[in-house]
Image 1 (cartoon, rainbow, N blue to C red):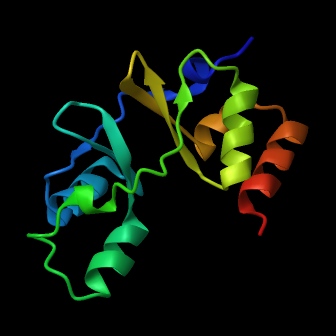
Image 2: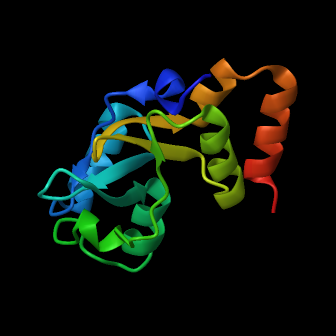
Length: 138
């Protein structure tokens, strides 16, 4: 059985819930990613922040990126998968919720992320096609 932990990208970096959106945008640039997990003071996952959140929720609303905090985007409707979960469970969740990045949790801590690229490297062509259609369909 292939697990979420087997295909995840380990070492995901969090933005702290009290860090500024400016810091988040700089982290995204430096890490070359389009989203960051938001972690609380307790080192637990609180939400996900995307580059779109920064553009639409901050810039377009003319909010100050230096004072707006990442935690303002931690909405509690977070999807995640356990590291020991079967990969089919992770794929089903990503397809149903149409999400492209899924946090992986072990012992209540973030241990990695599953991205579309991780999925592409680990699925055969037919299953990959179904996955992409599921995530990107409307």
